[in-house]
Length: 615
View 1: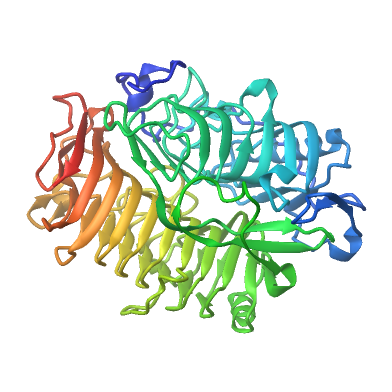
View 2 (view 1 turned 135 degrees about the horizontal axis):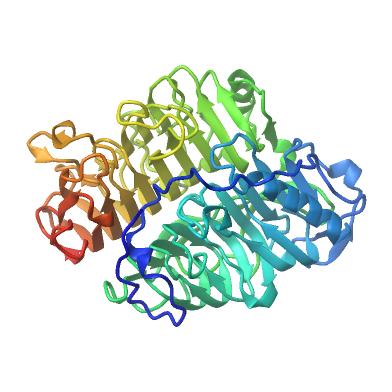
């Protein structure tokens, strides 16, 4: 149980529980009533003559579904507005009944909605469920109802609402409010919500971290007990609320910079970003993948003036289905194919090798890769413009040295004109099984952009323990000029982020130190107590970061200490803005925020420490 803590000081006129400042996600799952799971109606559901939109006019178009409907497997459900709403609702509700509390299950689903209006539809988004519109614009798919996330399965606690997403659609919410009560790995992308968006479950719940990009919210976003959040390149009617670390990058309608009271960090523009690729249906009924254009000095949504980018026919993709061998997938990559990875758990007996510039790897339904035998799951050559999106990499029981590697060691090419992107890429060590890894993601190429990464050593689930799900480091950056938007790295056993390359920039960092060091002797970095959550190497001369939070909860031994949350060289080009440390439940100590600077957090003070800048 977590003790109560002071309420938010943010400008919200919607109150929330005082306990919101002190909760850790390590809540016991035992004792929750099992939810009855209705059988899922698998397969693709679509009408014979779906209404689609042409990219230019958005006018309805009738095409032959039989000629264009691809086989995306039994766990992709495609809906058309001509279907009876009751039939759509039955299938959507059946998926939710299976997925509501299915935190570590193997089921995966994508619910895809062709362009048109859907009246009275309630899409409650559970685990491993990806909800998306199939128009070229979010406004092409208009759901009059809800596309929402609740936390009823944990009695209002949303701190374990992971691994789900909604994108590329418009929601006109029932009663004007569309709740999105989530924590990590649950992005909202390219969504237009014509009303209010609460980011927590209301008076009875907590939430702990989330991500929104390329979204338009006509009403208020109410953060409530949401502890930390990144909003990037969006347009908001209003933002209300703050707890520890709210970061806004390139957002029209963002609140003013005012860290730490309230804790709003505001950056006017994103220096370089390409929005996530997405599947859509063109005016003739054919499926394509749209790859948005690279933007620099970017602000606001990308789609308000029409889509900018390129379309790739689905025929240029190899559709990865459960049971496909790594040899089959690598053969398709070698032949010049992109990859569309269908919902499922895909076991790999060899590394997926991406060697061609511009390759798109797009996952549907939180598609999951599990490397066997201690291999690397995915490796990317030192080439331009690879896009990897929508994947969960789950460490296998044999330890992998690296799970995802971008560029080989020593990579040195300049990719500034066409950077590689990692978007909604999540890595998990333990939880579903006793996985092991040295490093989750290693970036050796330059100019790589990370956009919503959650690199998690599990603190609950199956196969969890100090000597069981072992993982040294979440992220190692060796490349130059690497950008991170929304970097979530948690519970690894040594320095959790190690940044060796020059020119790096991070916009929002969220970290929880490992809960389970058995004692101080087991968790020491040489002469230093504990490990830094975010370490910039002494050789680095230029690095900048905004909105960093690191929290401790040393449950196995509350006397454990980390000397610093952040360690970095004292160099003119190395700068940090808006940092916070928290002792969750006052179990454990972080002595300083950065480089022996900043007040300690532990059970002798308020348990929270802010630092506006360093140096």
